[in-house]
Length: 306
Image 1: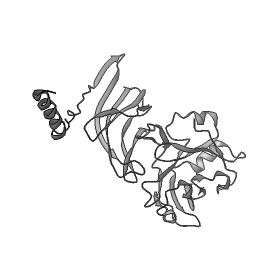
Image 2 (image 1 turned 180 degrees about the vertical axis):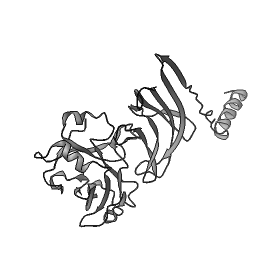
Image 3 (image 1 turned 60 degrees about the vertical axis):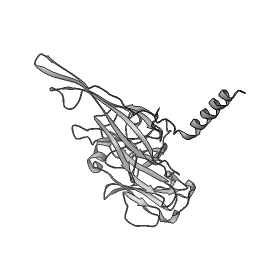
């Protein structure tokens, strides 16, 4: 090898070790919003699509390293001044994970009928997104929670879900909630079960785990039952054997355990009214529907997840 070639090869090698890796350029994006207003026979119709960007961070289960995520939120609606509430509305979410080197990779996306949406923190973790459909004519609002990690729908509820958290387990948590039939909802389960009182759901942080339909007594008319039971249900977890239900419940009996099967010794509680309470034991990380304590004549029937 000539001296000149040797020097060139040596210099290239030196530069490859001495120069830092080139950083990615800044992540940038843009999105426009649109509105169209038409008037026909004196009726105003507003067709709008609003887009915005949000950045969230969360830590995956079993990891102490944060994930940074860019969200593109698109909320579309059609409203008329001769109609209560939107004629139609939808929330669509696209996501990208931002790497430590500034790179951007596509993440999950999802959409649902709803009027508004925003990132949601459950048990102090922002790995969730909440889409709200507002109720009208006496119906309760419906909140649907999605996982930003998987893009999957976790559960739909009225009010707030209840959280069960295992301490010192590197992030093991469970969510449970109830959606009564008098909430704003497009769930086909209520079409299949016209006598249903509510849908009960149990989920981890990335997937729905269980679902069941709660039905009232066969010897009572559905309308009469609703007159007695219709309210905003209150949900929570408490320790098996007694205690007050808590919306944020810490399962200290499983402290430090990382096996989900150790999630036991707890009860999921639903209170519609003082006379209508539902208590479902949690056994080996499952809602034990077969051993639930129910009001007289009520039944719980497990539903498929799809």
